[in-house]
Image (tube, rainbow, N blue to C red; front, side, top):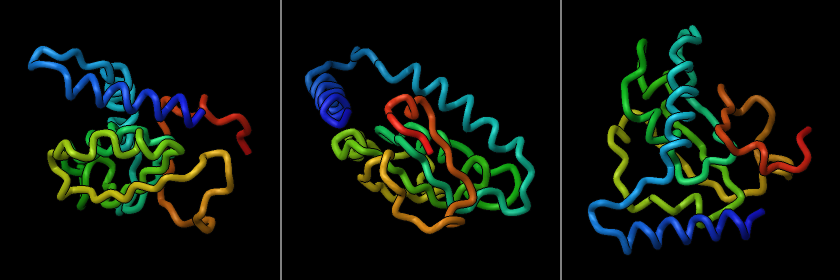
Length: 145
């Protein structure tokens, strides 16, 4: 699993570095599904939103970019009131693939990237996060609890 995700990260970064201005964006599907997921966060009514969130299988950080793209409806942070997002992924290369690309609106929501195996016990105590999200990544996990 990690080898395949590392290979995808290397290939994507290589295509971006070799391509001219007319490069094809291959993350459009992940972006569209992520946009639909993040859009629903503002439908959930919580006084403070979700100040601390965990993304399992974060990949290249598409959800973080989407969360930062707009202000929370009520309160602080990005969409859904998320002020800090911990991005967890088993592939370190995928997790850091796009870190050289600036995130528009990053002042709304900070992030921390953590390389860890989604199949192991997560390195956080119960109740740490206000929200746990995942988009198009749980199919990589062989054994869900």
